[in-house]
Image (cartoon, rainbow, N blue to C red; front, side, top):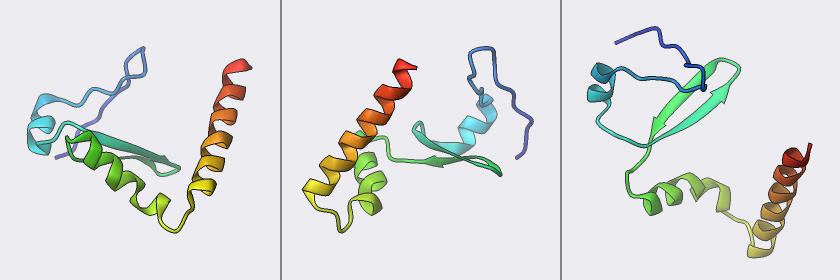
Length: 83
């Protein structure tokens, strides 16, 4: 099924009901690239969804490295909000 979709004034993308019925899931991860937007379903259980999302990112990293990356991300976000 293909449809042309539009963003509203608030930047929301509406997925028509007939498409949502086919999908049969409620939670998605949106991945943007130069080619477009890819929507990937994830489990409705938030703990399980986080585990799946973080599986590859956590592999082989120490707690110290994870804390460092988290601090750097927080600093980047804070800098963006100040500007």
